[in-house]
Length: 133
Image (cartoon, rainbow, N blue to C red; front, side, top):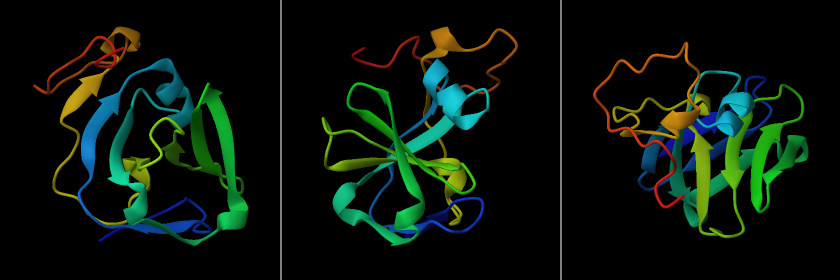
């Protein structure tokens, strides 16, 4: 069982089952949403995702058609992403997990959008764009 929360602790969630599609995304949208040089993300089944508290604090921002970034309106923490084109999936922002994970991201995505000052220093596979994109 995984647990996660926002910076202020107002939003809390749990997710069971495996976290899949673990990636570091360097796209402009993920960088701006995270305020960092990349965002670490992973997917869980929506049926295995439970919001424990803070429903009233959640806000959704449509960052591109059909893509909703969900964040805490109190502290601004980016928590997860929802997409009507993938209703069975919740894309978690791994930095908000409270549970310790042993497996980290397996790939770098959208490397073509990586800032010049950001060095990739591991041997993970790199994709210039999102696979299939």
